[in-house]
Length: 271
Ligand code: NAD
Image 1 (cartoon, helix red, strand yellow):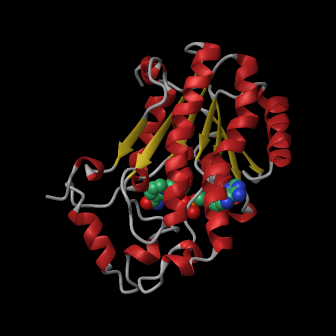
Image 2: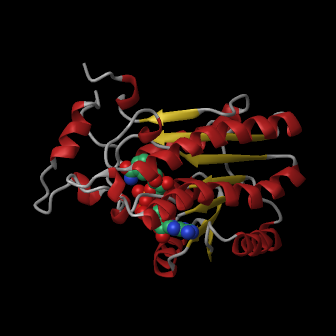
């Protein structure tokens, strides 16, 4: 790999690494020579992930952690510092929608369950802010680091039925710009903060609304493809290169961007 795109030897914390996209990124990171700290709340998923990463010769550890619990994250940070002495990269991947927070087609907005709204907005927004505070503190002490957040197409224009998820992802786009500015004003080019805005990838969070039980496309996923000029869903590996690029020296003058990885969805008016 050309040096300018290298992340070899970097210590990378990946939240939600037990999930579909986090798992794919974690694999690409160990393949690129990074040391991966996989964080998730699900022990079983974490065990599967660490076996997968170490089976291919990767340097990786799994630590149970809750992105909504600052104390749990502080313990994780101490554990990483004791093992590897530094934290170079934070990938805030934990997040997602929940069936209970998605309005049914015949449901009115005023029927929305407030408890689910609170869960989804908190997981996505606070679940990005809290790890950024805890692991960002280590980066501030080092005066170096790179943070990547995950926004969404829902942050660009309205996507029906998912109000909480959309509001939280819009918050993540703004938080990315805010924290990038704050870090650059304090630490120059040492600490960079960027985000990806994935288009539509089939994950656990959205499989049921995009794919019918018989494997055919739902009416909703047909609408998604009609507005995606490349006319397909993303493959889960298609975020990997963009994340690595943003964390590498090649992106040394890039901070505060939200990069769409969407097959053209955000560029297209639909006409
Ligand atoms: P996923 O559900 O497969 O993975 C999310 C992981 O986060 C899970 O392993 C889960 O256990 C973990 N997690 C949940 N709550 C946690 C907590 N409190 N603390 C620690 N870990 C926790 O989801 P995915 O499809 O891989 O999505 C990953 C990210 O990408 C999410 O932020 C999602 O919103 C975003 N995204 C996904 C798509 C898509 O099409 N799949 C599109 C746009 C954005």
